[in-house]
Length: 431
Ligand code: 4AD
Ligand code: MG
Image 1 (cartoon, helix red, strand yellow):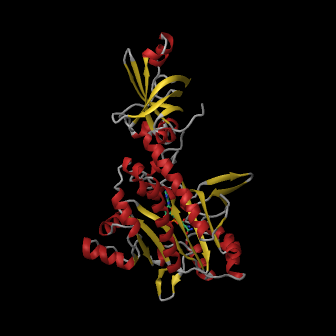
Image 2 (spheres, protein in one colour):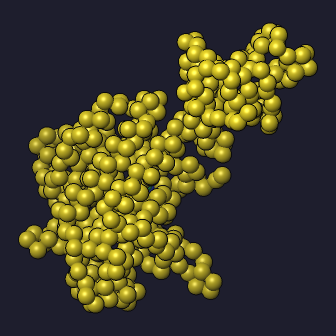
Image 3 (tube, protein in one colour):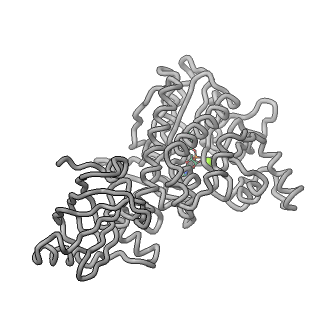
């Protein structure tokens, strides 16, 4: 008989089925063994009755423990008492891989589960998050395809910084040294002078000396860059991307989101409502007027300020025009307000923090040279980047989405570490 998934078996609903998977729960008596079997998407209760097997075979059933892998054949029928509403009355079974003393049981610490991450991936929680992440990533591919963007594969080893030298991971490179990518934005800017519209999701590395629930040392950033777009175009485009992917997740994962404790109704409302755009100066005003918080112009918005202002919004918001003085070298001055930069961040509701950072790109080589010098960078390392302005440069804009931040928000998980299969942070880089 052909093996089918548990989902397909439940869809069939009656008759003979053959499934395979792992033991999720087991209990038994002298006469019957109850197994809950899981596969990639579902779980189902299976019953092995002693009366159907000889003593030796039933004794084998008795030795089955959690996480044994198995093949089973039997008759499926609806049963209200079973965990997912169906039950298989087993006619034949085979243990494929035995499992004794599975190290993970209830109530283990987060650290222990991270040590055993290679096994914890099998948990329903991680399985559900990873399936949602996969849907999200596929949706994002569809979105960019619809928008006629080209997928562009950037270098991961890069000779210089993009987002500040202090968080670079240095890599020995033959007799020289290079760095792991903090962002492939500078290469995206080269690409748009050929392809006009590019995107990719690439591994991103930051030696963040942060022990927060929002920071990873290795994460995946979805970066997009487009020629001819200005700040307004790019912020609206970024909102459209996140909204599109959110809707796709909602379309396919309502039950999964509920399982993770997410309020699906609320998320659906968010997907429909407009997401406001406001200036950094307006954020300062809100903080002052509503929260009596004095944040001087020129101070970056950190977790505290971001969380405070998000108390007044129930959708993501876009904040533009941060102070130029504290922004990356490639963010241009607003010609009308030279102390502000033509840049934006998207902030998530409920304390999930910054989802996106982006900007229009500076065309002013002199300003960028000055800014790089102030950072202690050698501008001669950026000659190739300045060539993009020298030889037929056009206005362009782009942004980067922190994939794990978005997944953490959509899945309602408290630590970003659970938004990625094998998290790397300042304190953890194994297994
Ligand atoms: O705001 P960032 O630093 O922007 C850039 O790197 C730009 N060069 C992107 C561009 O314009 N092409 O990072 C973008 C996003 C952040 O908004 C955040 O969501 C995520 O990347 N991010 C992190 N996610 C997890 N752990 C970290 N340590 C992160 N640092 C940034
Ligand atoms: Mg940022």
